[in-house]
Image (cartoon, rainbow, N blue to C red; front, side, top):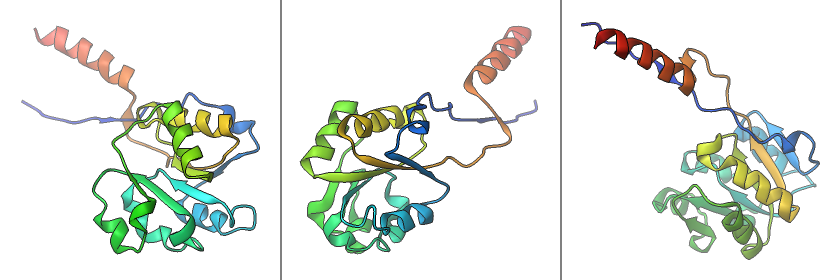
Length: 168
């Protein structure tokens, strides 16, 4: 038997409000987002990072990160503490989160700008965008890299149905 694999691509985002909203800015990389957070427009605002722990080494380049940066990440926080982020600024939770919970976190920590990745519906992207729109919070969205060499979920299902039926 031949065994092969096919990469399943994430679903496209269904939220398009960001294209018309002044408070949503798109960037290509985390480094671009950090540069933006150090600009005059954002320098005095608290920041909520919802991009995960992989980028923690880049967060320390945000001016005054110890005072104004809040991370919402999985409850494994050693790397954040080692980077110098204050434990009181860590929000350990397992997502995805509802729009209402995103809004509550924004209000609780006086967040002025939320940073997220263009993660798709399963990553809670729509709820984050809606929360920033409802609260008037700025949002920096790191675009998803272009994906090649895969199929979307409906293409995979059609392929499996076609091939499973022929082998039964």
